Length: 130
Image 1 (cartoon, rainbow, N blue to C red):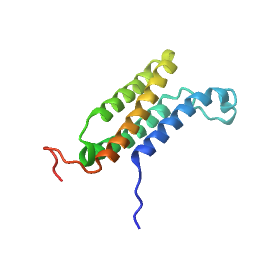
Image 2 (tube, helix red, strand yellow):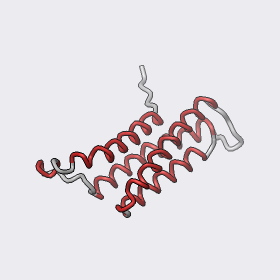
Image 3 (tube, helix red, strand yellow):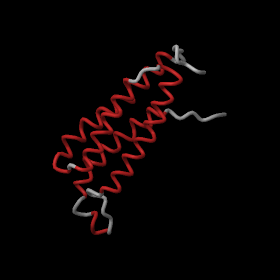
Image 4 (tube, rainbow, N blue to C red):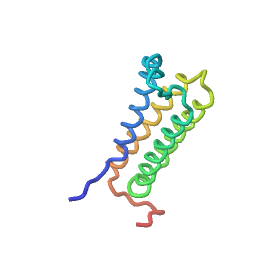
């Protein structure tokens, strides 16, 4: 019995968890330092989270592109969303204005990749090597 991981569902879950983290964390900002934890505006922590998102998304879109739909649209939307997250790391004043479209683009790209994979299942193109 093999276990199959739905990488798009994992990517959507991670993106939504990130959005919840960013929305709820300010509510606990006054309590968190009492425990000696500093994850509010911690660039290293946020960079690690973006890196995890890139790894999950990278594998998901690579798999979808090569094995199923051969479309770069989901990956392009994902890269745009990740780019906004990276800009957010350096421009704290516009954090919310960058975070909301970034998360939406990443979730939409994973959903689009998922749908295209299901529609095409195992489509072959001229450049297909499997």
